[in-house]
Length: 311
Image (cartoon, rainbow, N blue to C red; front, side, top):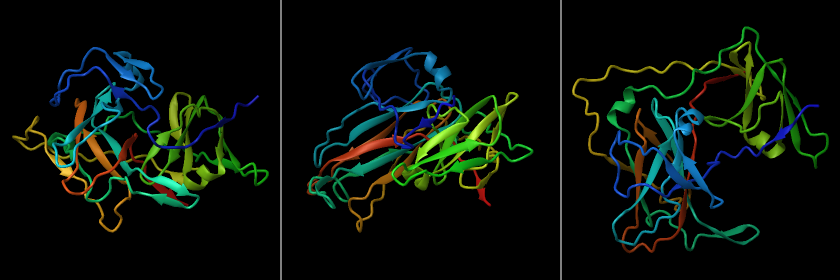
């Protein structure tokens, strides 16, 4: 009997962690990681980080040091440290989102009276090390293109109230892994490892999907569920490292530019870790005389870009 998986295709961080045992000062590039760390998950339980994480996450997974950050209007910036745990081979990019907090006051109305928006908050993100521009992204080689395209059959919902789509790969394989596709990113769907995958109508409308099929030990990419042909990822073009390029300069920071016309919109920004780098900082401050408010920092995983050509 086929096992059907139905997953919410949400791209927000699936495992929110805050580091509990780490030195307080900012750690320099290439700082030696502790042999083990104790993390606290969203449910309050403890999670041990040890050498086994390098096998589970060969190119790293991201976590925040702080689950909460308090800052004073006009005071010194608060520091939110971001960690790359597990393996650190190659560079890696975390996409981080800031969302001002709102409160719903009735069915169609929200209030931002206590939200931290434009003018209330200043967010500074640590810049990539100069060497990162000359390093390849840490990841396994991408799937190959099959000689004959692998397609996906899409079966729509039987009834409007059902709302599910059934996706089936039109190829027999030794293993399957489904991926969700967004605008310039893709992410493996945890547990979606069967030939057939079930997705809700809302998620199917928002995202595209494709499947990586392992056949005789070789990974192949399928065309997408919405008909985009699979094209293997192009190799990264890396320049020659200039002589005298500083390998461990003092950190610099870039300020997130906010739109005064949309004071309470969210912002997505990137944080790039160089090969071997495992800790970086976000500095958050509240300018004087602005009132201030609340917001949430969340982050996403990014698994590399894949170019797609619509049919």
